[in-house]
Image (cartoon, rainbow over all chains, first blue to last red; front, top):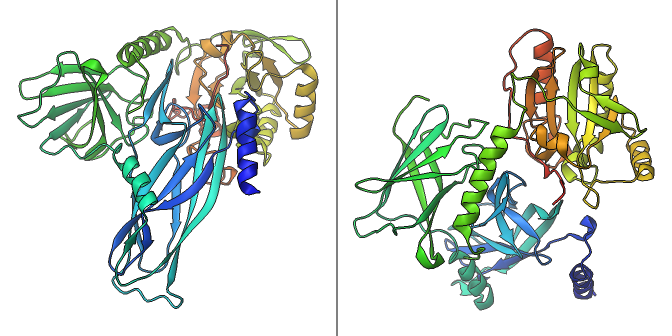
Amino acid sequence: MRRFAILAAGVVLAAGSALADRLEAQAAAVTDAAAIAPGQSFTVALALTMPRDAYVYWRNPGDAGLPTTIRWSLPEGFEAGEIEWPLPEIFDEPPLRSFGYKNGVLLPVRIQAPERLDPENGRVELRFRADWLICREACVPGGADLAVTLPVAEAPRPDAEGARRIAAARAKVPPAAEGWTGRMEMDERTLTLSFTPPEDFRLPARASVVFLPYREGVVEPAAAQRLRRANAGFELALTRDVMRVDPGDALRGALWIEGPEDRIQALEIELRRANADG
Amino acid sequence: MKRTTGWLAAALAAGIAWTVFAQQQGARPGAEAPDFSLRCLQGNEHTLRQFRGRWVVLEWTNYDCPFVRKFYSGGHMQRWQREVGGREDSVWLTICSSAPGQQGHFDAETWARRNTEWNVAPTALLLDPDGRVGRAYGATHTPHMYVIDPEGTLVYMGAIDSIRSANPADIERAENYVLRALENARAGRPVEPAQTRAYGCTVKYAN
């Protein structure tokens, strides 16, 4: 019955209804574990499926929208990591630019089980609250209370289908920029980022390079980022946001490099502050 | 990674468009607020100039935007409209720039019904269906707020408050930038911040 209701909603949306009230995401909890063991880590992910061309936002939504959030209610001793955010799409709607996921997304979170784990009935329940803003021309807030219940065993057992879906999402998460160093300098208007890649890295001749900070309010999302090649690497000059949010000692974000033939490379990098003023 | 073709071209175009937009928009704190002439629901013409000598709050709206509903569902916006509009020395103008066929664009009957349902109380509700005034002010979001002093100088533009959410429970915890700007400017104190990043839905201008 429930499955039927979801299908029916999909048909209505496919028919082209623009009614904001029907703009809904279906949320599900996905896990890569069929059974967990004490002291082991595993993954629980929020899977959002949505009508065609609908989207939700990245951790830094940009000029519009709100990030999707997850709030955990875990049994004692369990610890949840950060959301591992796949690289978003860039939505340009001049003069605005925002970042998000069209047509669905899966957001993995690593969970660490405690060393001592002996539940009475042999199962643990991991609950979380997810909230998002789903948009397609108009926007509607959505939310769901989700849970996964897993048996506790001597040795962990994987859930193959869940593991496959989570691995596919993780493949899109920008990997840490191994061997890179990054520094930032800031004055009143500009944030200048210096990147020093490892020796074997070559920046393509006509590369388009953009840095997307994880934090909102640090730079103007839609402002052009000026690339300057330097001896050991390259620099990007970013326009500071009107909010003038001070990133503090370090700024984390995704470095997006688009080379010839539309090949995109994305890396996660942390830039350390070089000057103290500004 | 999924992406549209010609991304670089799009990025450059967006950057240029943004720059042009930023230069063209007349509204910035410390400068004279662009004058306008707009019809209200009753069909009367209102100009900014006619309110010289009074403080003016401009509120960009779209009643079907969840971020706008955040402030109306619990009566907050209406209370602020009554507080500001109820004083001799200030007015509150609500402006809708939703284009025909876009979200938040209503016929007269729907406007009347929605206004009654929410018991709204701006000094006037002004319609800007061609978006000219919205663009002149650089209004990008609903709600997007502006405060203008009695001499016609813009003293604040941007977000309504400090917590960027669609959840009404956040209103009481947030710092209301508009009311604080009005209070500080009235008392002759500097308005800080004078500009913030607006949050909410995008203004539904004509495509």
